[in-house]
Length: 253
Image: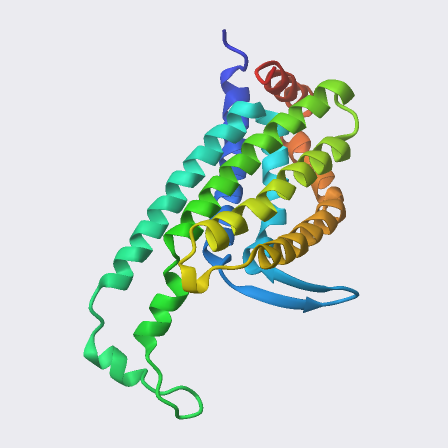
Protein backbone atom coordinates (compact mmCIF):
# COMPACT_ATOMS: atom_id res chain seq x y z
CA UNK A 1 0.00 0.00 0.00
CA UNK A 2 1.32 3.39 -1.02
CA UNK A 3 1.49 5.66 2.04
CA UNK A 4 2.94 8.84 0.52
CA UNK A 5 2.43 10.62 -2.77
CA UNK A 6 5.44 11.03 -5.05
CA UNK A 7 6.00 14.62 -3.85
CA UNK A 8 5.63 13.62 -0.22
CA UNK A 9 7.98 10.66 -0.63
CA UNK A 10 10.67 12.93 -2.05
CA UNK A 11 10.47 15.20 1.01
CA UNK A 12 10.48 12.24 3.39
CA UNK A 13 13.51 10.73 1.61
CA UNK A 14 15.39 14.03 1.84
CA UNK A 15 14.88 14.15 5.61
CA UNK A 16 15.91 10.51 6.00
CA UNK A 17 19.12 10.99 3.98
CA UNK A 18 20.08 14.09 5.97
CA UNK A 19 19.43 12.33 9.30
CA UNK A 20 21.36 9.26 8.14
CA UNK A 21 24.38 11.36 7.15
CA UNK A 22 24.21 13.22 10.46
CA UNK A 23 23.92 9.97 12.43
CA UNK A 24 26.59 7.98 10.56
CA UNK A 25 29.18 10.76 10.56
CA UNK A 26 28.97 11.34 14.30
CA UNK A 27 28.80 7.63 15.19
CA UNK A 28 31.98 6.94 13.18
CA UNK A 29 33.81 9.93 14.70
CA UNK A 30 32.85 8.74 18.20
CA UNK A 31 34.10 5.22 17.49
CA UNK A 32 37.46 6.36 16.06
CA UNK A 33 38.16 8.85 18.86
CA UNK A 34 36.89 6.61 21.64
CA UNK A 35 40.20 5.06 22.72
CA UNK A 36 41.53 8.19 24.44
CA UNK A 37 40.56 8.78 28.07
CA UNK A 38 40.69 12.36 29.32
CA UNK A 39 40.03 14.08 32.63
CA UNK A 40 37.46 16.80 33.27
CA UNK A 41 37.57 18.79 36.49
CA UNK A 42 34.32 20.63 37.10
CA UNK A 43 32.25 20.29 40.24
CA UNK A 44 33.06 16.58 39.89
CA UNK A 45 36.15 14.85 38.48
CA UNK A 46 35.38 12.78 35.39
CA UNK A 47 37.54 10.29 33.49
CA UNK A 48 35.86 10.17 30.09
CA UNK A 49 36.34 8.56 26.73
CA UNK A 50 36.69 11.19 23.98
CA UNK A 51 33.95 9.38 22.06
CA UNK A 52 31.48 10.19 24.82
CA UNK A 53 31.67 13.88 23.86
CA UNK A 54 30.26 13.06 20.40
CA UNK A 55 27.62 10.51 21.43
CA UNK A 56 25.01 13.09 22.56
CA UNK A 57 24.75 14.13 18.91
CA UNK A 58 24.08 10.48 18.02
CA UNK A 59 21.37 10.39 20.73
CA UNK A 60 19.55 13.24 19.00
CA UNK A 61 19.82 11.50 15.63
CA UNK A 62 18.53 8.20 17.04
CA UNK A 63 15.51 9.77 18.73
CA UNK A 64 14.50 11.87 15.72
CA UNK A 65 14.87 8.94 13.29
CA UNK A 66 12.85 6.82 15.72
CA UNK A 67 10.10 9.45 15.89
CA UNK A 68 9.67 9.86 12.13
CA UNK A 69 10.80 6.48 10.74
CA UNK A 70 10.21 4.03 13.58
CA UNK A 71 12.08 0.92 14.68
CA UNK A 72 12.93 -0.19 11.17
CA UNK A 73 14.47 3.16 10.30
CA UNK A 74 16.78 3.09 13.34
CA UNK A 75 17.68 -0.58 12.87
CA UNK A 76 18.55 -0.14 9.19
CA UNK A 77 20.80 2.84 9.81
CA UNK A 78 22.39 1.15 12.85
CA UNK A 79 23.26 -2.02 10.91
CA UNK A 80 24.61 0.04 8.01
CA UNK A 81 26.70 2.11 10.44
CA UNK A 82 28.22 -1.06 11.91
CA UNK A 83 29.20 -2.19 8.40
CA UNK A 84 30.85 1.17 7.72
CA UNK A 85 32.65 1.19 11.08
CA UNK A 86 33.97 -2.33 10.43
CA UNK A 87 35.14 -1.28 6.96
CA UNK A 88 36.94 1.79 8.37
CA UNK A 89 38.69 -0.28 11.04
CA UNK A 90 39.78 -2.77 8.35
CA UNK A 91 41.23 0.00 6.14
CA UNK A 92 43.00 1.56 9.13
CA UNK A 93 44.45 -1.83 10.11
CA UNK A 94 45.78 -2.38 6.58
CA UNK A 95 47.31 1.12 6.55
CA UNK A 96 49.30 0.35 9.70
CA UNK A 97 50.85 -2.71 8.03
CA UNK A 98 52.22 -0.74 5.06
CA UNK A 99 55.98 -0.16 5.12
CA UNK A 100 56.68 3.52 5.88
CA UNK A 101 58.81 5.54 3.44
CA UNK A 102 62.33 6.22 4.76
CA UNK A 103 62.17 9.97 3.99
CA UNK A 104 58.87 10.25 5.93
CA UNK A 105 60.50 8.67 8.97
CA UNK A 106 63.55 10.90 8.59
CA UNK A 107 61.79 14.27 8.27
CA UNK A 108 59.60 13.43 11.28
CA UNK A 109 62.21 11.84 13.54
CA UNK A 110 62.37 14.67 16.11
CA UNK A 111 59.70 16.11 18.39
CA UNK A 112 59.39 19.81 19.29
CA UNK A 113 62.00 19.40 22.04
CA UNK A 114 64.55 17.79 19.73
CA UNK A 115 64.08 14.28 21.15
CA UNK A 116 63.96 11.20 18.92
CA UNK A 117 60.45 10.50 17.69
CA UNK A 118 59.18 7.41 15.88
CA UNK A 119 56.27 8.72 13.84
CA UNK A 120 55.35 5.30 12.46
CA UNK A 121 55.00 3.93 15.98
CA UNK A 122 52.90 6.97 16.94
CA UNK A 123 50.71 6.53 13.84
CA UNK A 124 50.11 2.87 14.64
CA UNK A 125 49.52 3.55 18.33
CA UNK A 126 46.89 6.20 17.55
CA UNK A 127 45.05 4.45 14.73
CA UNK A 128 45.39 0.79 15.66
CA UNK A 129 42.76 -0.43 18.07
CA UNK A 130 42.81 -3.88 19.59
CA UNK A 131 40.27 -6.42 18.40
CA UNK A 132 38.67 -6.19 21.85
CA UNK A 133 37.95 -2.48 21.46
CA UNK A 134 36.53 -2.98 17.96
CA UNK A 135 34.34 -5.92 19.00
CA UNK A 136 33.29 -4.20 22.22
CA UNK A 137 32.35 -0.94 20.54
CA UNK A 138 30.31 -2.65 17.82
CA UNK A 139 28.45 -4.95 20.24
CA UNK A 140 27.75 -2.14 22.71
CA UNK A 141 26.58 0.16 19.91
CA UNK A 142 24.14 -2.39 18.49
CA UNK A 143 22.77 -3.47 21.88
CA UNK A 144 22.27 0.16 22.94
CA UNK A 145 20.58 1.12 19.67
CA UNK A 146 18.17 -1.83 19.69
CA UNK A 147 17.35 -1.27 23.36
CA UNK A 148 16.86 2.46 22.77
CA UNK A 149 14.43 1.97 19.90
CA UNK A 150 12.28 -0.51 21.84
CA UNK A 151 12.14 1.61 25.02
CA UNK A 152 11.37 4.73 22.94
CA UNK A 153 8.42 3.09 21.20
CA UNK A 154 7.06 1.55 24.43
CA UNK A 155 7.02 4.97 26.07
CA UNK A 156 5.44 6.50 22.96
CA UNK A 157 2.60 3.96 23.03
CA UNK A 158 1.83 5.14 26.56
CA UNK A 159 2.25 8.90 26.04
CA UNK A 160 1.14 9.25 22.41
CA UNK A 161 2.46 12.37 20.68
CA UNK A 162 2.93 14.18 24.00
CA UNK A 163 6.04 14.24 26.20
CA UNK A 164 8.72 14.02 23.51
CA UNK A 165 11.29 14.75 26.23
CA UNK A 166 10.20 11.72 28.25
CA UNK A 167 10.60 9.11 25.52
CA UNK A 168 13.77 10.70 24.11
CA UNK A 169 15.52 11.16 27.46
CA UNK A 170 14.12 7.98 29.06
CA UNK A 171 15.21 5.70 26.21
CA UNK A 172 18.65 7.32 26.09
CA UNK A 173 19.26 7.01 29.83
CA UNK A 174 18.36 3.31 29.83
CA UNK A 175 20.25 2.33 26.66
CA UNK A 176 23.36 4.34 27.54
CA UNK A 177 23.56 2.79 31.00
CA UNK A 178 24.14 -0.55 29.26
CA UNK A 179 26.44 0.94 26.61
CA UNK A 180 28.66 2.80 29.10
CA UNK A 181 29.66 -0.36 30.95
CA UNK A 182 29.34 -3.01 28.23
CA UNK A 183 31.92 -1.52 25.87
CA UNK A 184 34.51 -1.09 28.65
CA UNK A 185 33.87 -4.57 30.05
CA UNK A 186 34.32 -6.26 26.66
CA UNK A 187 37.17 -4.08 25.35
CA UNK A 188 39.31 -3.54 28.44
CA UNK A 189 38.47 -6.46 30.74
CA UNK A 190 37.15 -9.44 28.80
CA UNK A 191 39.17 -9.26 25.56
CA UNK A 192 42.09 -7.00 26.48
CA UNK A 193 45.65 -8.43 26.45
CA UNK A 194 46.60 -9.55 29.96
CA UNK A 195 49.27 -6.88 30.44
CA UNK A 196 46.83 -4.11 29.42
CA UNK A 197 43.68 -5.44 31.08
CA UNK A 198 41.66 -3.16 33.36
CA UNK A 199 40.38 -4.27 36.73
CA UNK A 200 36.61 -4.41 37.30
CA UNK A 201 37.00 -1.38 39.58
CA UNK A 202 38.57 0.59 36.71
CA UNK A 203 35.80 -0.54 34.35
CA UNK A 204 33.18 0.56 36.87
CA UNK A 205 34.93 3.87 37.61
CA UNK A 206 35.29 5.00 33.97
CA UNK A 207 31.89 3.51 33.03
CA UNK A 208 30.24 5.41 35.88
CA UNK A 209 31.85 8.68 34.80
CA UNK A 210 30.86 8.11 31.17
CA UNK A 211 27.26 7.40 32.18
CA UNK A 212 27.02 10.39 34.53
CA UNK A 213 28.26 12.63 31.73
CA UNK A 214 25.75 11.11 29.27
CA UNK A 215 23.00 11.43 31.89
CA UNK A 216 23.60 15.15 32.33
CA UNK A 217 24.01 15.82 28.61
CA UNK A 218 20.87 13.82 27.71
CA UNK A 219 18.86 16.18 29.91
CA UNK A 220 20.63 19.33 28.71
CA UNK A 221 20.15 18.57 25.00
CA UNK A 222 16.38 18.08 25.30
CA UNK A 223 15.70 21.54 23.78
CA UNK A 224 17.76 20.51 20.73
CA UNK A 225 15.45 17.54 20.17
CA UNK A 226 12.44 19.88 20.17
CA UNK A 227 14.33 22.20 17.81
CA UNK A 228 15.00 19.26 15.47
CA UNK A 229 11.30 18.39 15.48
CA UNK A 230 10.43 22.02 14.74
CA UNK A 231 12.77 22.18 11.71
CA UNK A 232 11.53 18.87 10.28
CA UNK A 233 7.86 19.71 10.86
CA UNK A 234 8.44 23.07 9.18
CA UNK A 235 9.99 21.40 6.13
CA UNK A 236 7.46 18.58 5.83
CA UNK A 237 4.42 20.53 6.92
CA UNK A 238 2.21 19.50 9.85
CA UNK A 239 0.09 17.09 7.83
CA UNK A 240 2.99 15.15 6.29
CA UNK A 241 4.96 15.20 9.56
CA UNK A 242 2.00 13.65 11.38
CA UNK A 243 1.60 11.07 8.62
CA UNK A 244 5.28 10.11 9.02
CA UNK A 245 4.97 9.76 12.79
CA UNK A 246 1.75 7.75 12.55
CA UNK A 247 3.27 5.40 9.97
CA UNK A 248 6.42 5.03 12.08
CA UNK A 249 4.32 4.12 15.13
CA UNK A 250 2.17 1.64 13.19
CA UNK A 251 5.22 -0.20 11.82
CA UNK A 252 6.90 -0.29 15.25
CA UNK A 253 4.18 -2.20 17.09
